[in-house]
Amino acid sequence: MKQPIIIALMAAAAISSSAAIPAYQAPQQLDMPTGAFHPVLSPDGSKLLFSTMDHTGLQCLDMTDGSIAIIDSRAAAGFQPIFSLDGSKVIYRTASKIDGLMNRDVREYNLATATNRQLKPMSREQVSPESISRDTYAESAFDKINVTINGKTTMIDPVDDAHSYLWASLSPDGTKIAFYEAFKGAFVANVDGTDARSINPKGIYPCWIDDNTVASVSHFDDGYFITRSYVQINDLTTGETAVVTTDDVLVDELTTSISTGAIVYSTLDGEVYILNPTTR
Image (cartoon, rainbow, N blue to C red):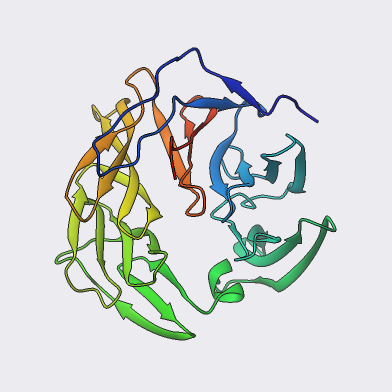
């Protein structure tokens, strides 16, 4: 067990933002193995999934006591895993080559019993964890976005001349989606694809904080190297934005907890930090 779970950074003042956007405390580094990437927070913010840079293996950090559970060590296990809605299980995929062709399965890990079972056998079919475990979700499907509400799926294409979509997700109230378009950045739209609005032209990994607030990573490069990368928050009601990380950190990916309002982000160096709101 690794304790204490959080190593406080030497930053005394909280990071401030505009009145409409939540203010956040100074970032705190999580006490985790070096080389942690692809963080995913549980719905209640009490657990954090992470993997290696190339998505090999999947582990889970308990944010309350610092313990780490090894969920799986196989290839691709860390690629876009999800928690069940009650946070008790992790649904994920693994990958394996069969007769030279890539195959994937879907698995479920029970956090309480530390048991693992296969939900769908290895096959060439592309099956998402969401489609196995949920009846309401949004899912990127290359040049379209699939929005499933109560088991009924609608395919939408919200941005004119879009090349491809990634990281689509539903707002907590189920009325909007946030997503990334490969050449145009982060957007929000209604669940039927109407009223698509750019919220961050350089934004990747958009994540909901609440029904009207989205966090994303603003990413800049010179064609070879990332030169600047930070967490930006957008208030959809007022149009206000705030930057909540500093320029001395190059942010890689982020994840949020709608329950607590916390933001967790990894860096290009494989370190992981948490931003807690000053009030909620």
